[in-house]
Length: 366
Image (cartoon, rainbow, N blue to C red; front, side, top):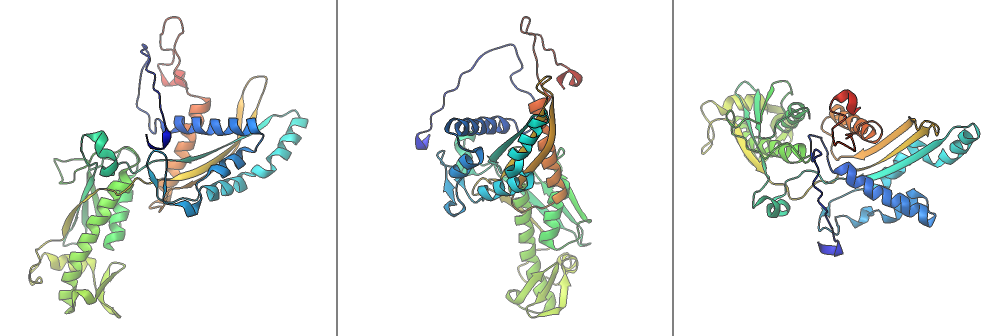
């Protein structure tokens, strides 16, 4: 690796299950190791864990920043996220509360974690060496019908991530159409023309969503020419604003996207313009995307039983432009619940003598 990074991997063959279906596998473990190292360093040198992280953050003015693996972080404000999490969690007042609780016979603890994640898996410049030359692009076809309704075909397939809602929102925003008449069709090459490489690597919105956006913009560009013909104006003088095409400086006389779509399937189109209103786009992202955040957790521990009670959990995450706040909130809540479960509840346990799996049912696993 560039930057003097070395890695050593040890493989051990056992009769235990090597892998299983689990979302986000690998990221929590890697973050745990990095954060534990920072906490141990802070303890060894007598520095507050917050200060250790702040000294090692990439500063906002250093972006774009190339790390030792050659990956480029495009933007971020890591310290800003941490400061906000500290403020919301009452971190700076924790030691006082901890001392008071100790006098009352209660044991409080606090932990924090800062993270950055590689998402939007797909840039061919970075992935081609690992994929045998494949470009992990995503595609979308958007078709506006003469009724003003639209169909969006995408290559990625949804199984709980909310693609239908989010992709339809992107199409509606780009085309200036209402959300309701947009129909999503995804993950079926027998039904639609869209092609994709899958739903994984936190890539559906960053890669597939951009394919929808780009196809929508191509439709708007074609519709602008048709609208100019309807308005008896030059296409260069026509602007598209909130679903309406109008001559610059004269918004009172306009044609809606639905009206233009109806005209696109009729007679009298501009010379050189094909009938219909549809476009297909393939998107190859120029870089990965890099969401980041800071989490703070305050707990109470019973030293006699080891029982852990969560008192307060604070999460500050930056994932860029939020398309659907409800879905984003659900992802955050789900991730927090998953992390707590990993730390406190879930265990794949084997009998040390026989190697027999002891947690083969969900009831045993939890």
